[in-house]
Image (cartoon, rainbow, N blue to C red; front, side, top):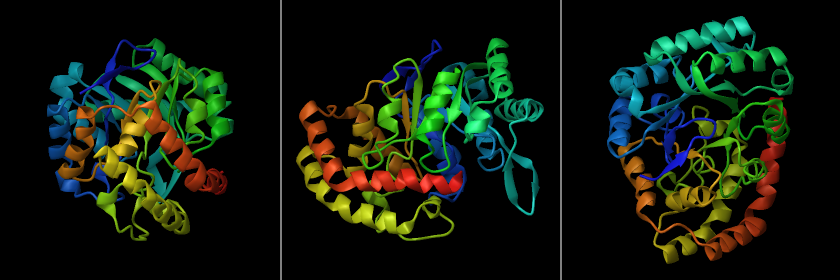
Length: 326
């Protein structure tokens, strides 16, 4: 396993991490009963970075990390997020709450489930611009860091692709890093964020809603899957336009799902990538990337040209799609 610096801390993190969300919910097609087995296997294979949120499984993601790794706390790095209030849901409707008192309550609950007295990365979860601009929220997060309860603090952007303006504003405001979607198809706003060498950069959905993971083909529309957050016409167009990339994969002797991770890890400013793992076979497939020669500059030119010809307009559509979540 290769490791990278987690900026603003002294920690080294596995460049491929485990995003707990895809293991403890059925949104990515996972067998939830296998979550612990997959997380243990990942740890045994060298993964030390686990990315979760308090709302993932209504706390289940954090509980599993606490159960499996509390005795190995000094050997793992944990990122979690707060800001959604699943404790006081009405009519199954989930609302956000960034009031400092609520954030304090939510953080306390997260630490209890994680069975720890600190987290390595604490992020506010999918905030809009008024939350990022709110000094009280930043003061709370900075206070948490000063108290040693978090080693670094940042912003997780979303839903879906999130908003470039919010990410840029968060870094200017003083948040120390971002979590966001970035992949071969949806390169912006990630490419812009990655120019900031001081921030930590946590990458999610590297396979573009399974379009770049041939193991999930054929891609079917489902209201219960995460891809329901996207326009399924976009998914179909992206799938059709991806077929031409398979020949490049054959020449490189890698799977498309592996190429997707190699593309992200080519950028040295990426801290870690969290593929959506749903079974042990996927975990093993993704980890094989660590054995391959990294992509070279000629490879990146091929991918860049392919993006301009086939994906750039889809990237623009993804950016526009996020407006409805504002």
